Length: 123
Image (cartoon, rainbow, N blue to C red):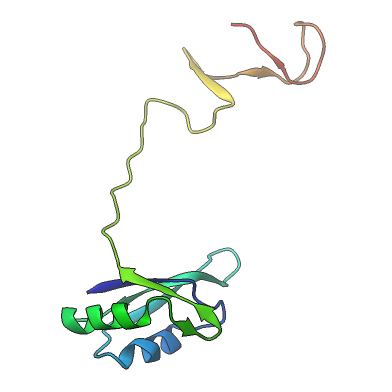
């Protein structure tokens, strides 16, 4: 059973999270999710317990409990929805698709369209 844990104290480690859930049964893995840019905890994590009954017991007893000074929320993890991307539009909305490639939507240099700055081009 895969369990989602949120509201974690930012100083908690994956090992400490394992210890919290080990009181309810065998823990296959526990991971606190870290921010890639800062290296700091994002305040949530996942715990995997091989026995579903032990996992449900942990969820019911740990949900809204206090761990290291913070009230945590514990629930069964949901499957992640597949990410879809549409290739028929550009990612950056400052560009419009035109024949021959992308063309800026805004006239940044002022050019011959009167005035300067970020005036909208008329196409």
